[in-house]
Image 1: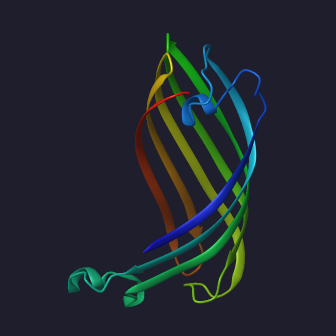
Image 2 (image 1 turned 90 degrees about the horizontal axis):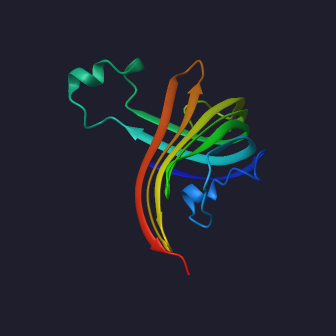
Amino acid sequence: KRYVYGLHGYYFFNHLRYAQAAAYSFSKIQKRSAGSIIAGVHASHQNIDMNFYKLNDFLQQNLPEGQLEFRFRYNDFSALFGYGYNWVFHRNWLYNVTFTSGVGYRHILPNSIDEEKNMMAFNYRLKMAFVLNRGNFFYGAHFMSDGRWYHSPQCFFFNTAHNLNFTAGFRF
């Protein structure tokens, strides 16, 4: 089970030429290629339960200390830094790639693999989009990967979520 919620806030240093909204919310149309350095903040809550009871006996024997259940519950607060680029490779076509990485503070909650304590938080977010604009119609394909690295004396855990979306719509 994985239950996650969070909030990201960004500032685009080249916001006069670079419009991330052209790639992800379709509220703008980017006509020339441009990029921007990005800075921001991130806060999230992670609640992840993994249980390996259904694995066969051979695989269960290879788990650390025979532990069949892992719980990760924590809050992350990070500063984000990265870069986004909109490439207009043909009239009405846009390709975007945006990468941000974050470093910050992680608070481990009770009932987790590591009892309540504080540690460093490391995470990343990668987004890519292809967009076609035809008059007021738009079509898009979006990929997003969101990952977090959890490292403690108890365990090493890298948690990622990947999304692929296809969108078509009309601007009024």
